[in-house]
Amino acid sequence: MREVDFIKENKEKWREYDEVASNRNASVESYTNAYHDLLADLAYANTKYPDSRIRIYLSNVAKKLHEKIYTPDKFSWATIKRLFAYEVPYLVVKHRKEYIITSVTFILFVILGVILQLQDINAFREIVGNHYVDETIRNIEAGEPCAVYGSSGEFETFFGVTFNNLMVCLRMYASGLFPFVGPLRFISVNGIMLGEFQTFFFQYDAGFESMTSIWIHGSLEIPSILIEATAAIILSYSIVFPGSYSRWESIKRGGVESMKVLLTALPVIVIAGFMEGYIARRSHDPLAVRLLIIFTLFSAWLYYYVYMPFQIYKKNKETEEFLKK
Image (cartoon, rainbow, N blue to C red; front, side, top):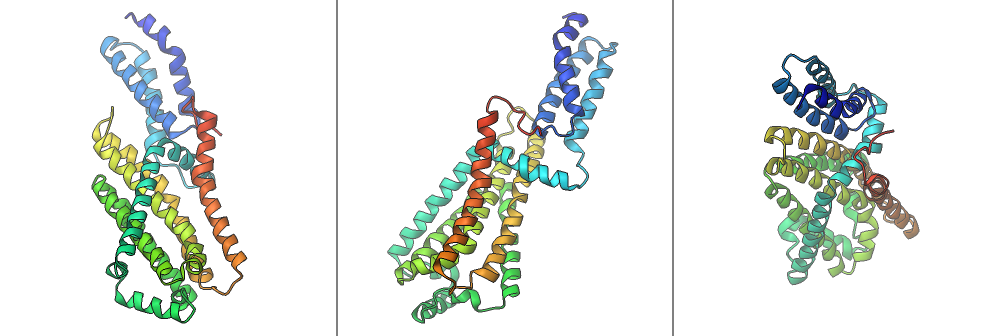
């Protein structure tokens, strides 16, 4: 192809890529798609037209795109707002297959936990130990099935639970480095534990009462586990299935995207810890109040991780320009 034909055929596309490179509000996906397409054109120009000035132009645009992708933005509230309001819902849409697989797998293990506990009433002891089970049985017999939440101070419970859940979050994410096997282990353990835990209370005729206390924090804690597991699966997927990218490039992309998803779980974990430390222990609050709290928190999770991504997908399903303000 003659140089003049090469330029004529691609100049409008390059102009668009130049505009993307100059747009601070464009999506990382937009930068990345433009960058890799432009690199292909630059490589072609270097081979076919080594003395052409078009090489300099393409190189400059590619450099700007590279900086947009790999140079971290300076901290600002606008950056934080963009991450939570636009990028994460977009990433949930992009990785909806991983999110759905994680959620369905977790539910299946919860059902398995229910079955195991129904078959053997002592199954739950194997996970949490005899001391916790015996104490909980005594509390149930005393008419306070969730008294364990009031066995220590409010701040002590809040700090201890939050710190423990943050450590679980980091271990869950790190398990993604052991593709699929690592995340599956965490999903299975947590799913079976939840199934056995809730069934245990029903077996002692305290199921509904326990749920109105446990799910005050569980309505956020359990969804946060799904988000952590999804982030780990995204990381695993980038390692095993690099697609058209080099493996290292795929891991970098998967690492950035999975970390952004994981970041949204952190405030959820803190709020869940607060609810467990300060609110869940208030078992004598009116039932309507407890149910309202559970409904509100669960609805907030559905809104952010289901409704918002669905709206983004519905409005933009024919384009990748999801993150334009």
